Image (cartoon, rainbow, N blue to C red; front, side):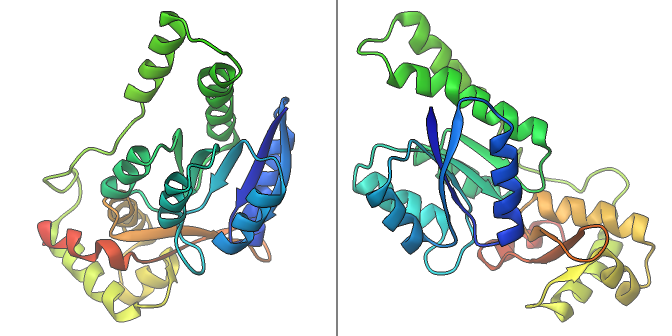
Length: 237
């Protein structure tokens, strides 16, 4: 049985990850933590094989915590789960040994695939005293096939610089708070359909962070500027 620690500061997302985990045979929840300090305590007191680690949390972020884990040589694997899709952060996570990287929001099928691949390519190898060439090749092929976001040099087809500038001006006005598609569409006087296309693009380049807010009725996507990657938008304006 693979023992999993969920590190996520949003209680609703943590509960969603827990419910997903319960659907996959061979995995068991070792505990949940809302920040790195709680995670450190649970890592010390419990048997943990795999961390499902969010990047943006109170205190030190997930990437900094992952770096600490590696410096302390803790024998634990990590799958990053986060709203950021910035290429630089994905590359940093992989260099620190993350075995996979899930970008919120994701479907159960992608979550399930990540855990099945972990069990097949990493966990199964950990249980062996020696590795065959085939085992090694499979694991290395899995690592090399991990998708990275391409560097975008031009606006996607259908987007214009003028509309992007208008939306970025409104987004800056709304900062540092978060906003929904409807709120931005209203502020910019642009249709929600068009705004969604630009929000998808701005999230893909890491300028915006996207989170799923749960409340009464259907969940709502909220966006805010990723301050660590704010300058990336200058390449498109």
